[in-house]
Length: 185
Length: 452
Image (cartoon, rainbow over all chains, first blue to last red; front, side, top):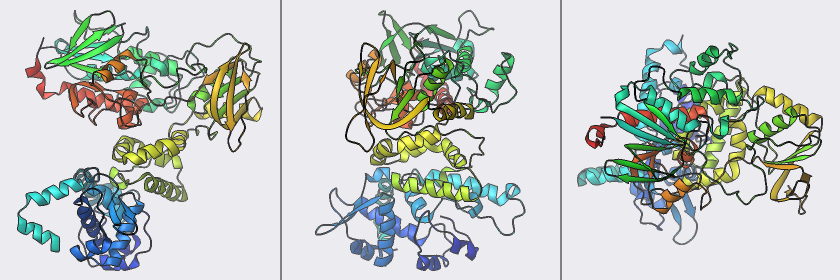
């Protein structure tokens, strides 16, 4: 979730307990959006799994093709989602990935904390991924930081109340051409 | 119109709920609170009715105010009673806190002809919800019409009625201090029992048995980490969460901090954490991690820790790892059978007394609490999936057997444990009581639901 123009900070940051995805971090540098590629693809994969009928599993290749994600990257993301208890796998015929629990109990905020680290718009607005700006004389008097602390709470309030089911509902409520656009983006 | 609220249970939770309702700026004519409590003492409940001065609060004075937005309320009360030591970091006896709670619901000095609060020494046996309110049925057959009912029944019944172990909170018996004693459980209740025994001049050995033999950790002055919910990986599995917790503690300790700072920093978020924890992870937590959590989260005052360590060093107190199997009353006392951890056979120490210090666990049906049993029987309530208490929604409204939240019946304190988990300590219950008071007294439907 942390997105910072300071490229050093980008290299230093990571998820909570992620492996060494240096490839991923390099690719992240190009993006200054709030969401990393990892977070975005992870959500898309879960969105896909949330639409499966009960008992049906999806293979990663199927998800990778549908959303145009590199399979290797997707497998790494799915592994993280498995470690954090959101998806489970079964090997063999008919095997693949599925959610571990009902999609209305999995919130977008849950997933992004695992894939992208603490929800925070700026490093000094997180306690666990804390990182002080190099030019900061006094963080307690920093107007930007204090504002970003409020932004952080607002982000959490939205993302912790948006379930995978609600995500699917949003798409269904939109017009079909937006649905199309989402599927290929 | 006058709003009638009936609180069922006059222990710490019910008293805090009443205090928070009374504290709202609402004219006396508009509020009537009834506390229904069969026991004589209101305010004390199980936790604070102990009359032993060695039973201390497990939380410092500065964190025990009844009102979260007025942290010095309790220490000012202590001053007025001439009990203040001037140090808000002290741990005072629990019976003192019981008096503080009783004082919160004492008759108001400037009371109008009809006081806002009354206490009925009765047992509540039924609740019937109707369109405009709820009828509170009492054991003597009378019915109390109310707008809202708040269940504050505490830890409701448990599965140990067949056990031959003694209730730790029964009045101490006359006994020979040279006789050995067996305690089952090694948590904070065991600490209280050992301190009582030491106070009474115990010279016979005390054996305390639990699965892992873990004692509560000791308090230290902490600087809780200011964790935001945005920092905590809520919604992930138990394994991931514990890994995160360990990593965070390790990083904090490496930076010169104390693990207690992290645990205490989590405290404002534990209820949210529990709510987002997947059901399977909750089950696993109770099975595998709750002991470790409890010993680190619910700590003992350093003075108690020192006396326990002394008793262990002198050989008076022995902590034994083992699985409790059964207890049998004999002519000379009680024999406890347990299987020492890692062994096949059983040992059977005997004590003049064997006391149950295992704390509160799950509800087993039928429960001895008539009210709860009737609510469950007629479908007004259901147990939470882990049978820790009744099922409530996150606004503390009771959930019926069809999954609907009640607009009239709410809960406060340990009866809501299935929903919040950490709802046994005053700092947690007072926040819940404040939230409930705001919900009920700000309730927009009130003006139309007038029955009075």
